Image (tube, rainbow over all chains, first blue to last red; front, side, top):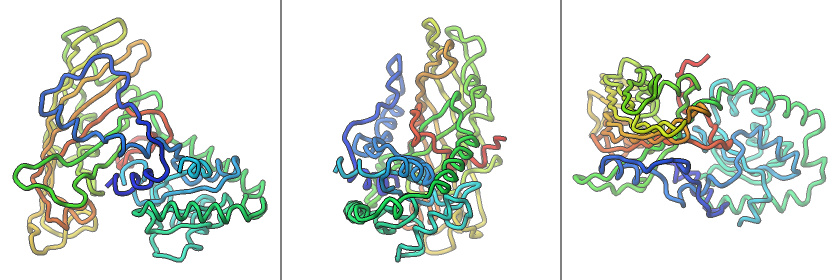
Amino acid sequence: MKNLVSGSIAALMLLAASIGLCADRTAPLQLSAEHAKCREIVLPNLGEQSYRNIPWRASVLHGIVDAQKNDKPIMFVLMNGHPLGCT
Amino acid sequence: MQKLSAMFVPAADQIERPGKSLEVGTSFESRLVQKIKKQCNDLASFQGVFVATPNGLLLAGSHEAVHDPRKVEQHMREGLEKWATLSADERLLSKAEFARAVSDLEVVEAQSQYPKDGLVLSAICRDLPRSSRPDTSPSRNAYNQDYAWFRKNESREFLPAQPVKGAKHKVPRELVERLARFHFVDLVRGHTTSFPQKAVERAELSAEVIDVQGDLVSLRFRGRTRTSEVHDGVHVEGKWNRPGTGIPELQKRGVDATLEGQAVYDLQADRFVSFDLVALSSRWGGNAYNGRLNDRDFGPAPMGIVLSLAGKTAAEQVPPLYFRYYGWK
């Protein structure tokens, strides 16, 4: 679901760099082969995660306040579930 | 495109959430959204992408843009052109209105239950490959994102009180049930309901200290959860399907997951510095809202869920989908 909504918007707005999931782990993960494979399949790739690089405000209200402060228009996405969470 | 996106303040929001309704609410924020939506001559749905001035003048926007990136770009460019023609009075809130908005935002932030000193996990779910029936659906690569919250005192309960190498610990059932009921749910292609407590058949997670280096305690997790519900087929919107071809009369759903993971807890900082938990599961059941009805994809089918430490950005502080059922006061 996520890649049908936020991902397509992000593809337009964004920026390539990734975010480092678990970047501060101190030891390599030791999982069974099937759980390791599962993890590899489930975690989003860089393209799918690119929308995370947008400096989103997580509410319209926060966006309105910052838009006024910065004298910029607001571009907002509304969904039944939170577009930055579970849509 | 980067230049274009920098010309806006980007925001994302949920139309309905506990204590807030952008569609029918009467708060400053809700009324502003309703004002913007009224200017948009399209479907009744509030779902969409909109470009507007801070004082609520719609510059561009539509429902369809949610699924069409080219439409989003078109709205952004159109919005900027209109923005350039407006005076400050035409585009900005009055001083009094802005003060109200700032005040409302302060209240919202003060009421947030985000556990900033606790454990916040990103929870991502996705279908896993099936050998028996290759998935050819357009949404076969879909995944969904949620967050799982634990307060500071709860996060400490993921490790033994005396965290010495070799120590073993049963994570309290209440915390594992939270995962089973609210986070090991089939949300891959859309929403469904969480599991009631009575649907939890197993909720076990054990932690073993595998290493201690100074203040850093390394843990290994192993566990199993199982939720299962059986319904008589009575339709309840969003939960069970109306009887029809290919839809089982006795409707069932559940998730059976084996858990493996690893984490590091910093005793000095009193927080996790890494956390990975992988739920390899079989899920069954489905409804129209979580996308399983159209393909009669009621399983059992493999689904993976990965929990990992979330960051601190505003986007990563969005409450869990089923937060209202956490029971936090």
